Length: 460
Ligand SMILES: *[C@@H]1O[C@H](CO)[C@@H](O)[C@H](O)[C@H]1NC(C)=O
Image (cartoon, rainbow, N blue to C red):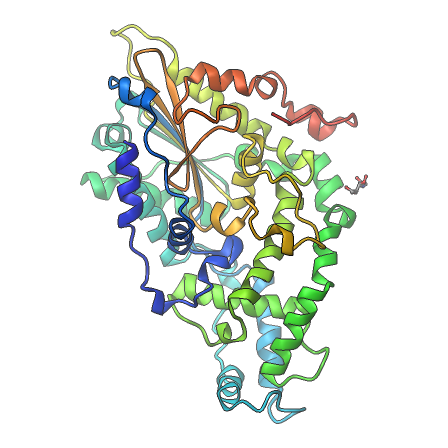
């Protein structure tokens, strides 16, 4: 099975590199899945060889799969679009005004292209799933079905073991992604669906909206995100803004860090939505992209991950839901009893996946990222471009083995080990439960989100 996943990863096709800027793997949470995967391969984060304990245990067979999946490539949100419009207006009105920046002929040509750039985004696109985003989910479903045919194949689609359970966030891009995922499974199995079935559950997939403590202590609290604000006003961003303003021939101070970021993400959206190497990309090189990627990571770290304990604890309902589902699927049963539910698919956001990865104890660096340690963080594990690109996924596969059920974890289709069980690729499920005992017995959403007391420990 490991070999299959690995081969799938190798055979994944993306656009050829010439179609995309060379920093396409550094767009943070706006990175395309294929660019993220290509970068992971380059970093040699390929799966380790299968551990001996699994080679001996040849009787393993997958019995259940739970997948938490992010929606696919999307249009900019209404707020993003407003900033993009400001940027486009600024560029259009800069005709002939001010110094012409660096005298580079090439730069002059780009400036001209950007002045005449057609602002084609409209407010109603507001974060919706793009056609490419549907494709992201169809392709992911198809690859997972290939790796786990007994769980995501024809029999499950026809309702075997109660069939698939699909829960989604209420956002349209997630509902559309949940459909596209099912479409991918049906197409691959050559099954004509009557209709796709998914149920909205924001309590599970948009838990952050329902956690008062989180909203008050983090979301509405600018102190909680001070490292992000500090970095935005810091020397790295200032240097980048000056350089871009000069390339654009804009006078000092006109191009704000917000507008600079809009240009960067515009480059990402044109690629993710239209497969286009946008002229806006010309403002940046790979080192510039790494600065903006870091800004995205800082924000996600302090707002959605290890930065504050409450960020993680808000996802306790999802954590409990997943383990309850695994408990049920792994329960010993007589041969006369029906097979366990083959798969549970949960479709949400980057903000759904990051706290879950955090609770699982993954991607926690020794030193937290701050406004001042960009240089020291070059080798950090917490990198949103690799963790939460479009269609990011966390997959837990319960295996039926001779010595009892085992659990395998895949993050973006790459095998990952549980931090508490670093020696095993697919540890016994009971050992996984023991490693997370403190969360399984605690991790109380109500207490964490409504109570005023000290948050419980999330350390492993
Ligand atoms: C805001 O965040 C800071 C830093 O995390 C924290 O010390 C403070 O208590 C928070 N304020 C509120 C109102 O929760």
